Length: 145
Image (tube, rainbow, N blue to C red; front, side, top):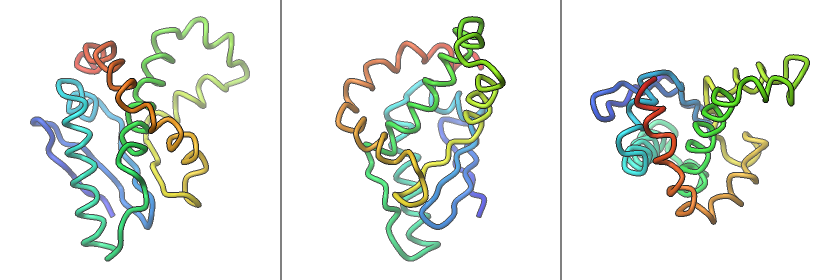
């Protein structure tokens, strides 16, 4: 089911499935997150949880910290892929660079069993506050998109 959320005057598009949330990473999403990444992501997560419970009658089984770190992680990965494009095309040959860049277009955030990388985000969730400190580094990039 396609849902739309207004965050800081920008429309964020999300497709929601059972235990899976697919966030469209377009320019509107980047601008929505850019000015207040911690607040904007918290608002999005809370809104998604409420709509998920209303639609499916159950809880979305992703921890808040893990969910936030996954969103920021995907944004930061795209930032690095684009900033270091020349070097990374060499490091990731045979179309692997383009594959990674394509995977940044939509963030698939799912519960265990739906998202094979959930364990990575769960481990990184312990460092949420440290990761929040890196966000200003990509804030201006997000805003310029």
